[in-house]
Image (cartoon, rainbow, N blue to C red; front, side, top):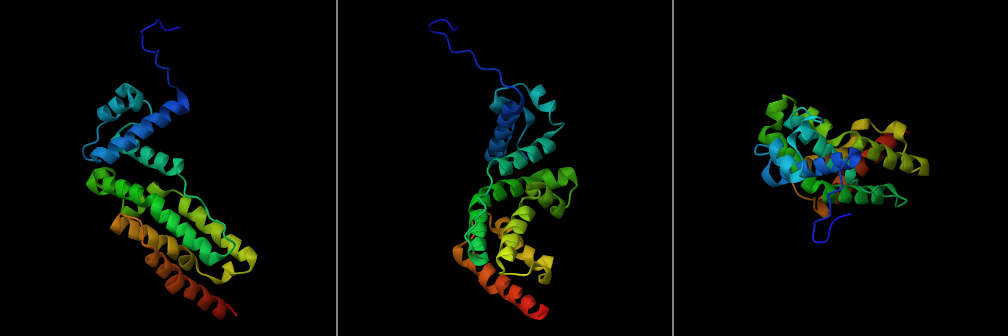
Length: 206
């Protein structure tokens, strides 16, 4: 028990709790200073631990930053809508994606273009896959499978590139603008580009 007037002893952090706090500290440092100025020493100091604790988990700054980006994405998932219709599902999904991922995209791609691409030798496409994982693919499949099961679309008649297009365009806009998409832009992607193509392929299959 702590003596009167003494500060409570800090609880020893272990396992997943410690790793989560380390990755949160790395993300905060990345957001505040950028990749070029981020150091393992600064992350350790922010996390109130020794630098050896970091190196036991990640061999270098690059891998720590990748892990922090993945942790940030997975710890703040974008809700998957189920409105009962493909059009409104896509409106909700792309709006949520744009709002939730705007800051994430700006910080992650800021890291890429301030040294991470050059340091790793990866292509932009390879880095995009490293940043996003299979999140977009699983969201696409779920939304479209529901629409298929309701009889709104026939997945067999629509090319994969068409199905991927709404999400690819949102990711592109987030990368270029680094801010949430305007509602009018999302409606254009869905109503003027995607849905007409879906109808065209449905008519062609008949």
